[in-house]
Image (tube, rainbow, N blue to C red; front, top):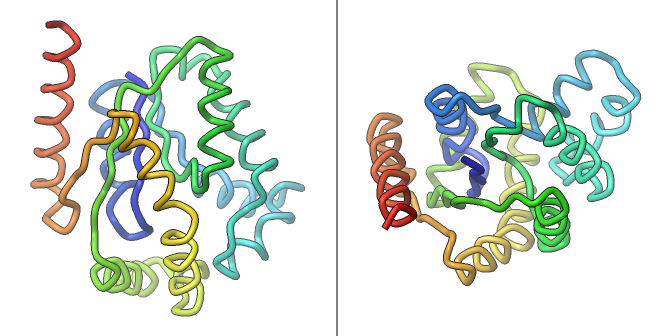
Length: 194
């Protein structure tokens, strides 16, 4: 199963993507986690992206696309993947579609985690207190939400037009959101069989 999760930061995408990864035995491919790991490891990529992420800006498309292309080519992604944090703009969405076409794979569903800015900010501030993440500083949160509305919302509309978008009511509890996702994916499986 090839899944994409979309939504603003703080919507619970990462939490639910991890659950889906475990349930389906497919990798959770998170650009944010890969970038943070590169920073912690002190790699060249990490040194390049650290100031970008700390300011709340988006990593340049070429770096992100290369990272995703390499990750999806790994053997554990052959049976599927849960892609989280990419695409963040229309150029990346086009690159993802082209990349998937090249390897003869398509997205089975695009899960859209719908959440208000107020709830997203509240959640991100809580995460900042718990985890001390620099990219959850108030200025970075505001910038990331601004970028989400300007650049990622058009991606949501692109996938809505494709018929693959599955809206998820993400302001509820983790368990309630997980239940809604399971129901939606079961319905997609039934439709695919019919």
